[in-house]
Length: 463
Picture 1 (spheres, rainbow, N blue to C red):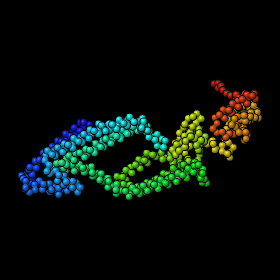
Picture 2: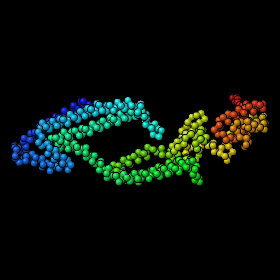
Picture 3: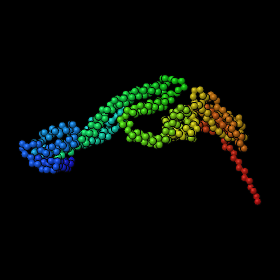
Picture 4: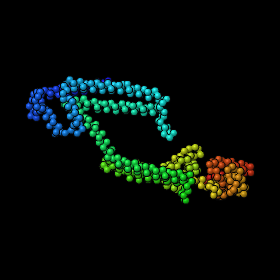
C-alpha cells in the first residue's frame, strides 16, 4: 500500500510539474495560429493563445456541463501562478494518499479483525427455511470478501476523483482530465438512461411474473388437494397429481418466458438472439438422454405399473420401490441393496408387480414350491403332506385353501407344485423359508424319503 501511494504521488507530481512548466511558459509567451510568438503585457488585448484555445474549443466543443465546469475553473485558476497550482495539486495528492493509507491500514483492518473476533458469537449460520446454506465459518469468509471488495471499490473511486482533479488544475492537461471523467461518467449515464427507458418494460415483466406466480400457486393448491384425496376427479388417480402439476408448472413458465421475452432489454439484438439459439442447441444436444428419461418417466407415471412401496421385479431384480421420479426408479432388494433403473430401461422391460394381487378385491399373491418324488410314493400322500405343510406356515391364508398341481411325469419321478395364498408381500422371503421347513418336516414325519433316485445308463461299444 505504501509503494502504491508513493508511486501515485510521484507520478502525479511529476506530471503536474511538467504541465505546470508548460503552463508557465504559455503565460509569458503565446503563439498564434501562424506560429508567431507574441509578448504579453498588462493592459493589452486578449492573448492570442486564449483565442487559439477558444478556436480549439469551437472546433471540438465540450459537453454543456463540462464546458460550464471548464469556464468556472478558468475563471478561478487564470490568476493562479505555477507555485499555487502545484501546491494545490500536491496537497490533494497528499490528502488522498493519507486517506488511502488510513482506509487500508486502519479502517478495513479494524473491520476485518472485528468480523473474525465476532465470528463465533454474533455471526450465525445462514439458513433458509431451516436449511443450513452456509456455516458460521463460511459466513465470516463471505463478510471478509465483501469488505475486501468494498475496499477496492472505494480505492478505485478515490483514484478516479483524484487524477482528473489534479490534471484539471492546468490548462495543458485539463482536456485529458475531462476525457478521463468521460470514461467513467459516459457509461454510467448510458446505463442510467437505459434503465429509465426500460422501466415500462420492466414493470410489464414484473406484472407478468406476478400473475404467473399466482396461477402456479392455484395449480399447486389443486394438486395437493387431489394428492390428499380431498378433491376427487373421476378416473384421475392421486399419484397423477404431482407429475401433472410439474408438467403444467413447466408449461406455464415457458408460456410466461415467451410472453416476457420481447420486453427484455436487448432482446431484439442479434447477439442476444444468437446466444439464445446457441444455448438451445447445446441444451438439445447435451440432454437427449435426459429428455428421453423424462418422457419415459411421464409415460410410466400415467401407465401406473407400480407405486411407492410395491414389491416388483424389473430385469430379474426383485425389490421394493423406494423412489420414483421423472428420471429414475430405485428398488430396495431383500438384501438392502439399492438398484437404480433409468426410466428408458424400464419402459422397454417387463415389470412384475406382486402388490397388485394383494388388493382388497383379490385373493392374494400365490407362492409356489416344486418337489419331485418317485412313482413308488403315492400321489395322494404327497398332496396331503404338501397342503398340511402350507397350512402350517405363518402368513399363509387358510382361505382360499392351498392346492397342489402335478406339473409333469418324467422318466423317473413325478413333479408336484404346492400353491398357497398370502397378502403379506413384504414377508415373502420369510414365508418361503418357513414353507420349505414345513415341507421337509412333514415328509420326515410321514416317513417319506425326499431323496430322488438318479439313474445313468452307459452304453459300452465294442469294436
